[in-house]
Length: 160
Image (cartoon, rainbow, N blue to C red):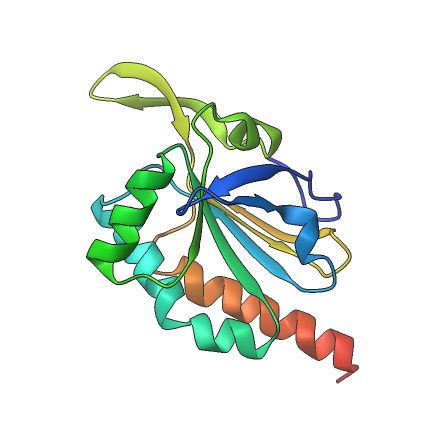
């Protein structure tokens, strides 16, 4: 997994409405980038709802929250509508960005091995440098943990 202190790899992916979104277009603002396995599954829904509930707090710190999975833009749109989410969700069907961030890994379930997304989160500073990186994050705790990391960044920038 990419570590803190590393420049965040730039990318462009389609959002839930099929619009291209480029990471570097958010320079000057902190970005919470989180990778999750699949739309409309229990853990992923819990995580996305947590980010939606805290969206106002993230925005109050000038931050944007972006979720990425290999699901299609149409799947993301259904997920957003069904769960009443208020997030940018990006589609990475070829898992190229998952690989860039080293979160596409071999997993095992019921004795079968396969490749998939390891639930991971990154706090990217306004300058594009990764400040926090977490692998195998807990869906329920991740949004609050990233908000705390963002709070620490804001305090540091304000010199308090």
